[in-house]
Image (tube, rainbow, N blue to C red; front, side):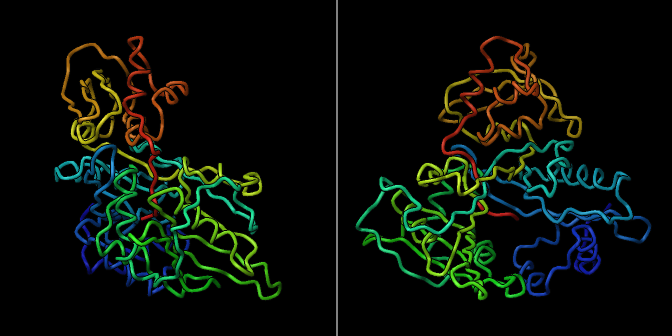
Length: 403
């Protein structure tokens, strides 16, 4: 195992191509340089051959009541010739231990290519989202959906991220799981690489605004069906708004574009009002899926970095085979003003694996739900409902983009 340098870039990209079964276009590779942190790339070698890779980005992630540093794990892959030999396990252990030793990020996060992989390394499925396809209909939304006559829609330059940055920041401040975006990450969010369009139009942007400023935006592309005009598809990359009326105005626009037959949304928050607004939500065929995974690297710092919905004082008995410094009993005391976590010798109130703690950390999965699945044990009556209420958060956590 060793840290990779710029001289390893070709080998790094080759492993990625074999691991994911695709070759990245040159334009995409070049655009990735903007956010790629070479000092964080690690490689597993068999002799002189690079056979496994991983890296991480330095994130600042919205967590309940605060923002916390997080290692955003990405580019994880192993050559097909070297799978099932412990290469991935070695990479994950090396990376998590390195993050802990650096002492900066108490959390690691990732999007899983396959959900069965990362639980064994302590990553818990922490956010969910649904995808859906809304058929075109001027009456797709119910009559009682919020409406503000002061709102105006206009098309804008999709690359002008500064125009929409305040809306994004407002959503991030309210919703756990949304990362802060600096200029580098905004450039990535609005990039439009022709080689990846697959017949879709260039990226477009519509904003909802009033006399006081922008209240919402949507970035999207369209794909026309020239064999059957009127059968086109709208592909939504990102839609965000600071209030319900602005969000509804954007949905109305996206669902009723001329010559389009349907609108595809790939990443809708689980508590988004859309399904309540649709006249016939069944026609949209919503599909629920996993999204962001969370791993507590420094357990006491992570639990002390967020606030809690109600006052609690519980002792957690945590199992963590990969990170022994997290294992054992911890007293967690906190509330809406913040929390603190320290070692304890007192009897435990709850027992759980660090994976389940990661799943509950952002407030997306209830501890009681995990207990019903046999993954959390209540050792003292009453501790489970209290902890469940304390870890909960509204709005639900959501991750707006894959990294």
